Length: 370
Image 1 (cartoon, rainbow, N blue to C red):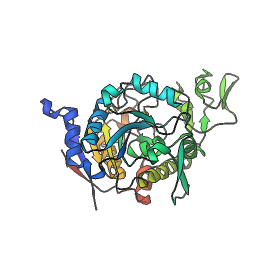
Image 2: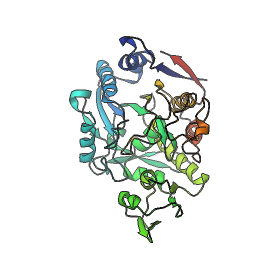
Image 3: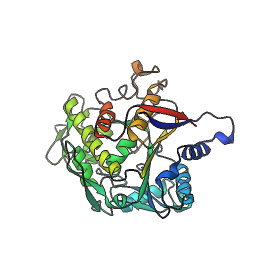
Image 4: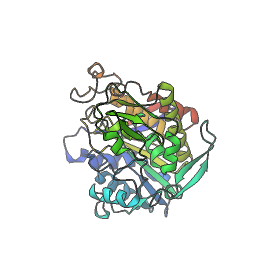
């Protein structure tokens, strides 16, 4: 049976079709109220963006969701978890300061910010699952203890999973640092010495000092946690995560099991809204925003994260690519795989296929235009 995916494009010739009103219409059309009970403590899970990034989700969208939750008698809070890598969201103090700098004040969103895994990412619970890789997963305590959750995701590319949508937001975003390590624990960077210029940028960003510079070349030493930050910041793209396709598949499978556990813990009390706009090649964890891969598409929502992410990926691939972006020119045409056009070796389909196999949802979807 097909899962419904509600979709509203951004085309409009009047204020009734502005993005704020389109989001409101989607929430009404999908009957978002069905997952909310009066008195619920409701997590609004999103990503505040790394300092220097400007493609993160606009707080005005979060405000509409907060208003809807309050209208239904529930009590919303805005939340995320601390990062594994060094940056402006490594601990809750820096994280909240970054959120405030990016416009997530109480005045704009009318809800408190709670970093769900605590000051230093040590506040979590273990949730049992029956996965291939994990029998239990670590979930931030304040997310686990919430009565309901609405997951807001900026849909974009990603340097390790191909794209980041609802599934990745659940997996990494609901996990404390130890849970993020679980997902990355088997995969390590491979450095192409022929391309390396010895600029030392990767070493300066490594949270575990696991990269050394010897003879003007980067070298992996003991202590790597597989966070992938070195790959992201390398200016000459000489670092890849994983030695082969198998390693990347295992990472994405591990990530998907974490997403499955987070979703199951909120079964019947969780909804997903993806914003397919500002589709950058990499995650909002980057301290920059590269040129968008495709034109803005619209807002999509579902109670099924697998169907939603599949529908969003299809919509992105249907677009004509931006020739001034990271996209390889042979992938610019409508129908071409835009994610493979940026990171050709990343099997992004794995998160969709494995999510369906785990029972998170179905790839069979029906678009409901709003």
